[in-house]
Image (cartoon, rainbow, N blue to C red; front, side):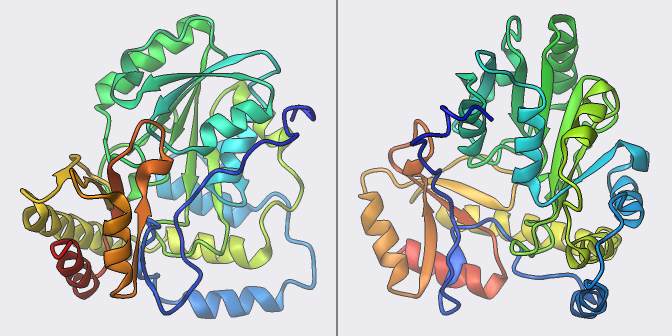
Length: 336
């Protein structure tokens, strides 16, 4: 990190509500967690009087099986964002430029700037067609946040081929890919894949994730990560969750069904970006965004003010939750 770059840099707004009395549609987190989590956590907590094994063999094995790669390509991280930071700080030097999609996750640009790098924004739906020449890194969010866009595998592979030719590292953030049946970019030379366990398994406070890389990037990532980067409970619960295939399949079915139902209910009242993610980006049209936010808050709900994303000025983002919770949100949105 460049010390001067860290002076006075702004924090990035995020969704999430700490009030347990509010139903939170502002953060794209599964409202359900896999069975057995509490027992695994309790058992791991009893083992936390000792340092964890810094090699994390069980966690790496579970993650490798989860995404279909050898365990040695897994680099554990305390959450997806920590992985993104590690990928950027071991790739981007002061003065380097990075291709960053927009609108997309705001932390990409911030992390590049913290390294003293230069951000070149590219429309998110044009990123795979962009020219990586002269850039140290290119970033793709798949599915993209906040739009829900999923990229064609062929387009991603074509973009990766051009990145290889120019010596540009491709960072693919797959934080929401587990909600889909789309293939991962793991195992592709020249690619760093970032995965998070926060969203799919409904445990944002646990802070567990990992990176996947198969070439010299992997050596840099492993060399750069801090020791004992995962606490014992996070490693144990994370490994347990990644083995819950039935839970994952049930979640995918529920999110797909509920997303289709919510789109059908809101069509004609809001502009809706096509999404394969566990959230929808809504254009509120002539309604003031603040009025929409205030109306849902009357029913103890909260949605994400998407004006905090680059280039959006009339949008909110809403997560896909349980059917009965989604019904409450639909009633409020249709009453604005």
